[in-house]
Length: 389
Ligand SMILES: *Cc1c(COP(=O)(O)O)cnc(C)c1O
Image (cartoon, rainbow, N blue to C red; front, side, top):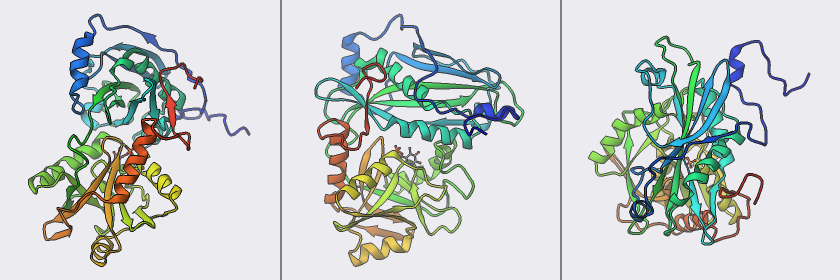
């Protein structure tokens, strides 16, 4: 029997995407009647901040159980109309992605490993009982927003256009089951350099009271619910003078999982890099995967394994762990100076950014901005039709 033939026995199978290299949806385009003027756009791009300003357009695609994905469109950016009974508002059936468009020195526009985000959106969809958007349609949705709003990709150093694809259950039904009606959207927001005064090491707060994920939960899915659960501990981090919160595993409260929205790495001198293994409660970051590859390329040993709080403390005290950093698309790589907890301090709050940390950060951004050869084929050009380089 052909492996590719999907079973038709349950309607739920229509949530699965059939792999295809080419986009199957075609997009209609409705231009904004009053897009921002060049002067208005330049003012925003001159000081974009993060996540506060949005481009003139957005992508929307609808899905129904009967009809599958349909009505792919580029429309003016604006509020969604949601019935108050929409399931996402009650049961949180929502997932999202985050990636960036980078402008290179020759003005071309690129993105970084979008197929990874497409696959992760599919994995998140499976866990949240949402339909899988075919990867080619995901990438086409990114191309479409760049086709209309490419001028919004800033050109100053370390700036980008942050792309936020997301999917919500929008069936008007209060019964508890996977929704039969879903919307997928892409919005875009110009992003300034994350660190405006040079990369500054941060202090992070150990949450001893709360977890972000448990065994069999949604930790490996990029869903809004995980973030909702992290906001209270994140507030406690702020109250304790820390920029981010670190979560331990929910089962034993001894292993390091990750930060609220970033993966964590330990540097052992120049020879070894260690990061917590994927247990099902850790989000598999694209930056995490890329950093591991760059470290291997440098001849470093890369270990994905359990890291306990004791390993961290002991490693720093013995001098074996020389640097700690966090990574994710938004901030790329962020040095961690100190871990603080109710009765705990590991590291030195005044420590400068580590050398390996900064070298990996520099190499990754150099690839993303086209300043170094793309030796792993990680970049996809966005400002040309699909298939052209
Ligand atoms: C998105 C995210 C990351 C980082 O993933 P990247 O693909 O590197 O941006 C890490 N942890 C969590 C919880 C996330 O949601």
